[in-house]
Image 1: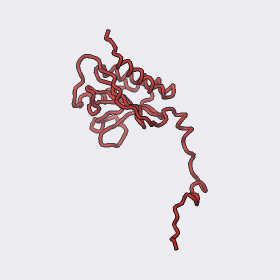
Image 2: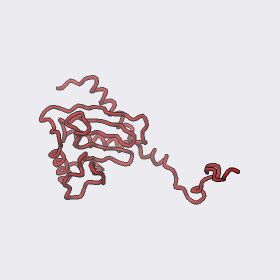
Image 3: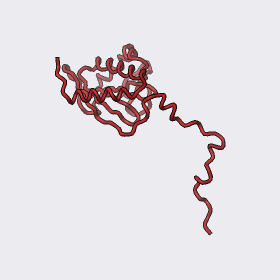
Image 4: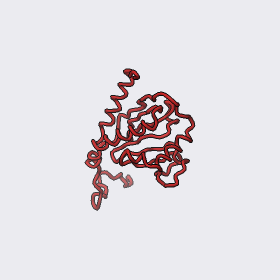
Length: 186
């Protein structure tokens, strides 16, 4: 059995705290997806970011984010599996979402989505095109990369409560005191 260092234990506690920010249903989903991805990438390092928009766990053969193969990205409205170089992956089943020049993702409503053959093919293709190969043996480390001081709400109930109602009619017009002065000085 492998010994756990205090740094690893601290990182695990931080990770658990990040996940607890989400609704209970999303917490279970994130933990389940993490378990499934960790099983598929046992030798990869888990690189964690608790950023403004997303909570992310990247799976990389090194400690460099640019070497990551996939990542789990979560926010209040769902969880996805991101393929870091997904734009160049073959996707005959048209599963990948996104239109950027590099990254693509799939939405996950359960960890079992990762067991689907078409998703396994995408993961295998991402591993095959990785610039740095995964180590053949060993266990990857958990590395906390970044924690943003300011973050979007991680719970859907908070997002719904803080969303602005749509502006209509008179509410859409600016109040006179908020308009810039347009008169010429005489």
